[in-house]
Structure formats: structure tokens, C-alpha cells
Image (cartoon, rainbow, N blue to C red; front, side, top):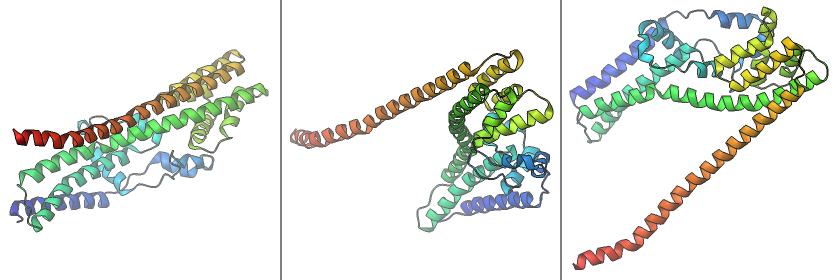
Length: 304
């Protein structure tokens, strides 16, 4: 039987969700200056793609909820925000916070709904069970976007490192053909059409218009995204730009070292996967032996 308290909890959850969605809908969207400038600048049309290849859309419902949460909720509630990971994935902070709020609300609503459903079929639960489950599930789902951002950023960094090795080879070839430092870096960035080459091309173009050395722009990008390989490449190009050093050999050696390191990491990961695959086989062997021995043990204990 469905108790009155369960119905009240379910009604309160739906009412709270409706109030939050209504506020998010009626709240005026704030203009994003960076996004507006991006739309007005034709040379940065490719900046609207992220690592997944999808376009950066206008403010969504989650972003509006995130804007409201940033203004209304204390900063300590977010505990830790993966800023570097969000910058690498190009996920706006408002969308990230909105996703956390939506996921937490879903965690609050799901247990009372399940309790109400089981109550309809005659499987009632004490009120404390769905209440505790709501708090626990909401907490877990509140941190789920953090895990997703960190995991996606790890994959994006691996993809960036792979593409950076090819980019370094292209820069080395351009320098060997007599191109200048900036010209070699910009020409190499225009070769590829992946999000990595697009990101590098954007930073180099921005540094050219702002009068900043290209290696300083890549240093800033490496610090922002947490990419030590890009930072090392920027150091090599600074030697070439400021001291006129020949860096063809250094660049080729750096790209070869990056490929070797990635190959070693993939081999280690494959070995780890192979070791994990032996665990299910061992468990099956133990279960099979237990099934063989169980009848004899049962007869022995029954005779005694």
C-alpha cells in the first residue's frame, strides 16, 4: 500500500522539479560575449567544433539552470570543478553545473517513483528506504558529470598527443624547407582537419593578431589544458625563434620519442587487460571444482 508520506515525497519531488524548470525557463539568458564574437568572426568559424566534432550550440536549458546555480548556490557546493578538463572538452561551466543539478534531481526523483510503483503492486517499503536511497543516488549522480569529464578529457589528451606527434613532424618538414618559425607552425596546423589541428590553428591565429609569439601562445594553451608534450614543443620552437637554432633534428627526435612512449603505454595497457582476462577464467575453474566437490561433501555430512 502506498502511504501518505510516500505520496507527499513524490509530490514534493515533482513540485520542486517543476519550480526549478519554470525558473530556468523564465530566467533571461545572459549574452556570451566570446560566443557572439566567434559568430561574428568568419576566420574562426572552425572554432565551433569540439573534440566530438559537434557544433557549439546556443544556451540550452542545462546552461540556464547552471547560470542560476552559479548565482544562487554557494561555491563550496561544487567541491571540485575539473577546469582543465572542461577547457579541453570546450564544455561551458554553466552547462557542466546545469548537468550536475539535473542529474542530482533525477537521483532524488527515481527512488520515490520506484517506491510508488512497488507500492502499487503490493510491495511496500518503509519510508526510510526511498528517502535514504534518494539522498545516496542524488549524491552519486551529482558527481557523475565530474567522472565523465575526467574520462573524456583523458581520451581527448591521448588523441591530442597522437595528433601532436604528426603536427611536430609537419613543422619539422616546413622548417627543413626554409619556412620561418611562425609560417611553419601555421602551415602545419592548416594541413589537418581534426579538432587538434583546429585548436592549434586558432591559438596561432590569435597570437598573430595579438602580436604574441606563437610559442608563448602554445605555452599558455599547454598550461590551460594540462598538456606537457605541447609545452615541450613550444620550448623547442622558442629556441628556434629567439636564437635561430636548427631544430629539425630535435623535432623529429621529439615526435619519435612521443610515438615510442605511446606505444609502450598501449603495450602495458594490453598486458594489463590480458591479466584481467585471466581472473574470470580462474573464477570459473573454482566454481567448477566446487560443483564437483559439493555432492561428496553433502553426502559425507549427511552420513555423519
